[in-house]
Amino acid sequence: MVSLAVSGLAAVDNPAPGVAVIRCLREEGFAGTIVGLAYDVLEPGILNREIVDAAYLLPYPKAGKAALLERLVHIHERHHLHAIIPCLDSELTNLIGLEKELAARSIRCILPTSAQLKAVSKRRLTGQLAALGVKSPETRFASGPQEIRKIVEEMDLPVFIKGPFYEAYKARTVEEALHFSSIVADRWGYPVIIQEDVKGEEINAAVVSDGKGGCAAVCMKKLVITGKGKGWTGVSIKNEKLLAIARAITSGIGWRGPMEIEAIQGPDDTIWVIEINPRFPAWIYLSKAAGLNLPYLLLQMIEGRSLPAESDYRTGVVFSNFTTNIITEIGTIEGLFTAGEVHYEKEL
Amino acid sequence: MPFDLHKLQQYAISANGLIFDPETGSIFTTNQTGLSILNHLKAGLDPDQVKERLAEEYEVPTGEVLDHDLNDFLNQLLSLHIVQENDG
Figure (cartoon, rainbow over the protein chains, first blue to last red):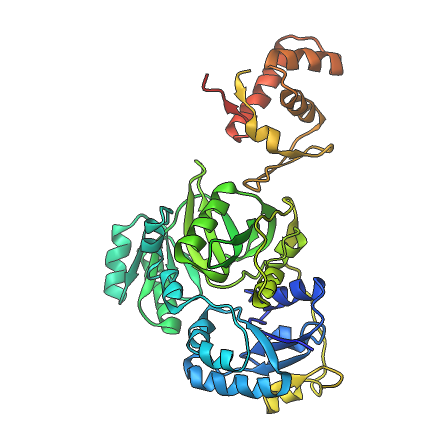
C-alpha cells in the first residue's frame, strides 16, 4: 500500500493546509496510508484518525536537515514512504537539502530549487516580480527600531509589518509600527518587513506547476477575513489577470510544485501581488470543490504524469471554515507524548 | 446603447436577485424590479425601451417618477461598475 506523508496539520485559527490537502486526496480516491507529520503533540490534524492513519512529531526546522533525515528514515522504515507533500514554508529549505538522500530511498518530493525558493522569498519578491512585469507594493526591510521609524516616516500610513515567514500587522501610526515590529522581531529576528498598504479587494490563487510552463490554478476572493488577516470564508472566482500572473510567475521562475499567490485587486482592476507562499493555501479544499483538485494533480505529478494541457473549474463555489471539536482519548494519543508518534491503522 | 454591458453579460444573476461577478467575486442583491431592468439591459434594450417595458410590466405611467427611479438605479449600476459608460 502506498504511503504518503503530509505536514501542516495545525488546523487552528490560523490553519495550515495539511488537513485540506489530505481531504482533497482522500476524496479523489487515494486509498493508501496517510502519515501525518507534525511539530506539536496537540496539532488538531494528528488527533483525528479520520484524517491520518499515523502521525509522527518532527524536529523543528532549526534543528537542521540531519535531524530531519534521521526522523524521516525512522518513519520510512515503518511506512515505506512513497512521497512527502510538505505544507509549511519553513520546512522547505531542509527538504531541498535532503533531495538526494530522499531520492536514494525512493521517497519522492516535488520541490522548488533553493534558488527558486529564494526568488519568491519576501526579501527578493519585489525585484523578482518587477522583472516579470508584475506589480507589487513598495516593500522595505529594517534591521532595527531606528531604521523602522525612519522607513515608516518616509512611507504613507498605514503600513503592514511582516515577519519573514508568517504574521502581518497593519500599523496606522509610527508607534504602532514600532510595537508590531518588536513583536515580529522577538519571534523571527530582524530584518522586519515594512510593506505599503495598497487599497483594494483581496484575491488569491492556488497554483500547481510542472516547471516546464504547465500550470493549473484556482482563484478565490476572500469574503470574510479574520483578525489575523486570514480568509475565513471565500468564493471561487475566475480572474483572468491573476491567472495570467500565475502563469507568468511559474513559467518565469520555472517553479515546480504548489504555490499560493496573494494579491490585491485595486479599484481600477490593477493586480498587486503582495506575497507568494511556496505551498498550497489552507483554503485548497475549495479547488477540489470547484472541480480542479490541485493536490490530486500534484500527486499525479509525483507519480510521473503530466499536468492537463487545459483546466477549468466552477466559479461561485463558497467555502467557510467551520469550528467544532474533535474528541479522542488520552490513552489513544499517549504515544505522541511518550514516543512522538501515534498509530491509528488497524494493522501494519 | 449608452452602456457597455460586457461585464453584465458575464454575471451570474439568479431568479431571486443575487448578482455574482465571477471575475472579482463581488456579490450584489436587487429586488424584482431591479432584476427586470438588468434582464432587459442584458437583452439589449436601451434605457428608453426599458422604461416602456417597466411601464407595461408594473402598469405605471411613463412619467417623471419612473424616469427618476430608473435613472437612480442605472446610476447605481454605474457606480458599482456593473455597467460602464460607452466610450462611443
